[in-house]
Every structure is written in C-alpha cells, then in structure tokens.
Image 1: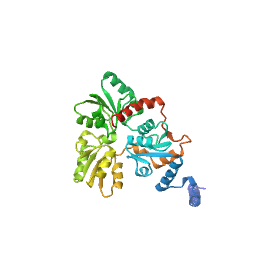
Image 2: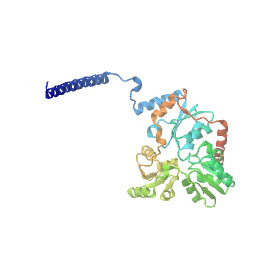
Image 3: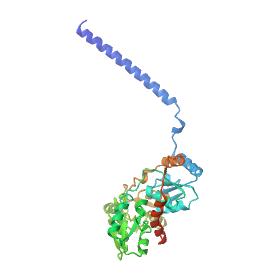
Image 4: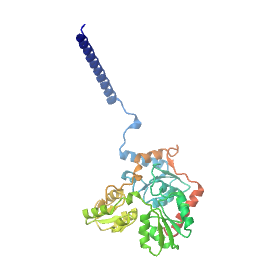
Length: 355
C-alpha cells in the first residue's frame, strides 16, 4: 500500500470515528433532555413566589412567638412582614414592649445588641450574621478610653450607632432625632461627640455655647452624597423640598429644607402639604414613601445611596432564621450580664434626659 493510500485510509477512519462520537454525544444529549423534561424536581427545591415565602414567614413567626423588627432601610418585601418598622432605637423599644419571647432583627449588628440590652430576658436574633455597620465599628473602647484619660473633663456623647463595647466607656447615648435635645440638656460644657462628625457638626452649630470635640468618623453611605449631586437634583426638581439626614456632610445639610432622622424625614413628607420631595438618605426611604403616599412624588438625591450592609438581609434569611432558632443555626445575640449593665448606663442616661 502506497503512502498516499495509507493516508487516505487513516483519514476515512478518523472521519468515521468522529461521526460515531458525534452520534454518541447527540444520543447522550437527547437522553439528558428526556430526563430533565420528565423528572420532577425535589419538593424542597420548588420555587416559591415572594408572597408564598412571606406567608410561610407569617405562619412561622406565630408558631415561634417571634416579633420581627425591620429597619426602614430594609427591602420592601421584608418591611411588609415586619411587626415593627422604623429607626434603630425605636425598634429596640418596640422589642421591649412586644408580647413575644423571641426577637428577630432585620438590620445590623449594633441594633440587635441594643435590643438585647433593653430586653435581656428575651432571645434576640439577627437575620443576617454578616450585617454590620461600618460607622459603629470605626472607633473602639481603647481609643475612647485613651482620649478620656487625656481629657477627663469631657463628657462622652455616643451616637446609638456604636457597639455595646464602646458604649461601656461613654456617658450618654443619643439618636439622630434626640441628639440636639440631649446635648442641650447636659450640664457639661465640654463634650466629645462620637463617632459621626457630620451629625456632631450639625449639633455643634446649634449649640455654639458648648465646647464640642469631634473625631473623624461617620456613615459612608450618607457621607457619599455630594453638594454637586444635591444641586443637580434640586435643579431637576425645582418644586421639590429637599429632606436631609444629619449624617450627610455639612455642605449638603446646608442645602436642605428639612434636616432630621429617617423617621423624621418620613413623617415630615407624609404630613406636609407639599407634593414633591428630594430624599437625602438611603434610597429605600423614597420607595417606602412612594407606597405610603402614592399621591406625592419622591426623588432620591442620587440612585447610588444604598446601604450595602442593610441590603445583605433577604427574605430567605428571615425564613431560615425562624426555622433555625431552636437548632442553633440562627444567629443569636449573646451578651453577658456585666456587658449589658455597663453598656446600658449611657442609654439609661439618655432616657433620663428625655431621649
């Protein structure tokens, strides 16, 4: 056999082999498709709609005697199944007054800690264990203790957005809605306001008679709003009122028609006769207000103001937390009695001063 004839035979054999392989693969694909199309998926993997999952959650929370708390920055589908919604401290008070053995917090870690401090006899769970607050973690107990040693005559005012550990070395706690009132009510003239320097600056400007020291800290989400973006939104919506959270930078706050907490912004918008509003806080608030007031128009100051940590919590997280409370799979907030007692002192002082 010539070399040419041999090469032709090898080519024919290769073509036959490729044809047979293609036929085999085609048959395999057909068999796979038949299996996929005729097989029934396991019951536990059946896809649920949002409404079906919400119904399961509502049933489970009754069975487990659980109150669900959702911060206002949570997604709409979570807010809809919550027993209580609002700002962090308000929710902790709601948890204390709730007729429930278990509390499931849809928010971030420091919020669940505060709920536990106010309700130590209840089991408190955080729906997503990874949901933290960057601002709450910016300063620690050691740093503030060192400053106290250097300036022992300063009263330490801590924003509620702080860890339980940090609260143990602070004198009084404040919320964004009570900060100005509490600072005015304090006998002390020299203060250290932590950790949000933007909220602190807003308070400081209204209480010039007091010596208020600020440290560089704050909410990355609110601090990301720029005056340029605010001006652009005001130009795009000239008939809208600009409602701003005091965690925003001073240049943005100065452009506001109203400055207040998240709940303050929502109440102002609901009760106002005005019909258009630019919302200078997390974008969820614009959405919630649009549902609550369909006859009004709400514009986020920018579409990029999203609290990533708040958005970590999902509806399946809520469902799985309710399922896992007794098995240990749910994330429970555990604090010893001494930590609760030490951290709660500054909250009790806030309550005493009218916070």
